[in-house]
Image (cartoon, rainbow, N blue to C red; front, top):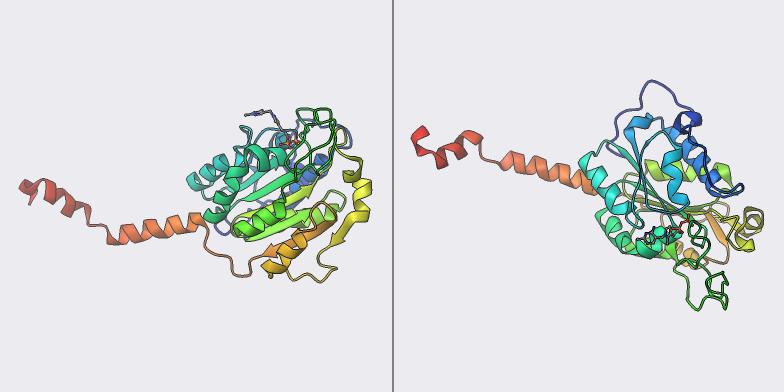
Length: 298
Ligand SMILES: Cc1ncc(C[n+]2csc(CCOP(=O)(O)OP(=O)(O)O)c2C)c(N)n1
């Protein structure tokens, strides 16, 4: 969030970021909590809604931009990140948020992850991880546990799940966190911290699907599985320790910041700005170039 304009004079509340559109998520869906956490985090940051772009792919979770007053684009399945990167580069002053489901982000969109991380585009990527394809009525997703039985896999999944936390840490993301609507205060703080991190930030949110999700993922059951990283004394500047803890994905829910780069590298947008300035400094004056092509002017 390094290149954002100063906080505007008006102060905002979470309701300023909620649109009039009534969510059509199933009652009890974890995504309601994510929406609340995002709007509360935005109110703490205080950027006016018209300075925010909220981009998503396709899925139940990807409906979230429409429920906010930010500019939104509920785009194409798996393509939220490329679209968001283009938007951020075209207008670096925007605060850019991106939302995906685990299917949208790690299946069809999985190829984009390494590249957004290595470019270090200054945006916040929220994945609402329910370990199932919700919108299309409960097929296996890349984070579904091995053995999971669904209507379209009644003998149980034969595949190992992907580990989103380990992916992002291994790719070199500067900010990697995990939260859950079972801890709303913690989740709100994580979203705010992710947005404030000056570079690419990733937040995996354990947001259960009440209709097709497994019983073990539901919010009430989650409470017994949550381990707060700060209570554990985790040092969030230690990427290797974070990778060790990330191995527990799928068994316990580590809640908090796994890794925050203490010396954030320059974002891609800032590098582009520097390059423009350098090129302008060494550029020949326009008059000189004109003379080269039209000697008669000299
Ligand atoms: C190119 C393309 N392939 C497949 C689909 C069908 N489709 C829509 S949403 C979705 C998966 C949704 O799961 P997830 O991303 O985990 O989000 P959730 O609905 O669980 O929040 C699929 C396969 C599509 N819309 N476009």
